[in-house]
Length: 183
Image (tube, rainbow, N blue to C red; front, side, top):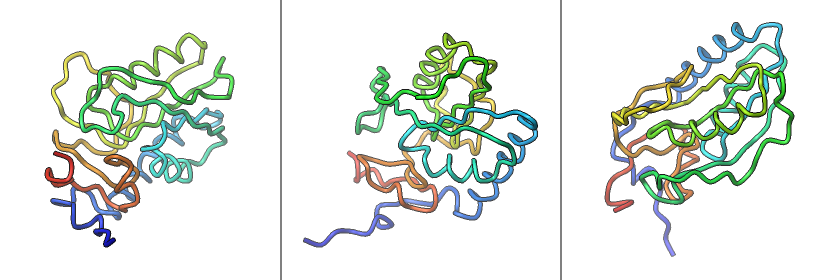
């Protein structure tokens, strides 16, 4: 069986590997300044944010705890299901801590809203939100994020951790997936 190259399924590249690295370094510098002298709890929303999260944490010049959570509203589709499912919770106590939620992409804002409400009752000192991509969907009453890598049009994108049905995560750039790949 011959397997296609993932690059054959990309309509166009939105952000190159170099553009991504530069923007991640900028956000890392901003977060380092914000949490200077602190020890934030960095929470990666698996699996999509894993690449962004590890690169971002390496660009931060402060002490931190790192943990991984898993929440999704997609379930292998291209649109949110409207329901968030938490599959893995944090194992670190958030009480009195600065908590930083690191997401891959915000479109409806449903997952981020869910996580902020869930963690707020655990009495953190603060909750900061960071997303790699902010999809401009025009969704009403959507959660705002504190830090954003890039604004993108309302198109289905993959790469740098983002997937379609668990494929394309390994691409080093962000690309628009051809519609015939998911329709």
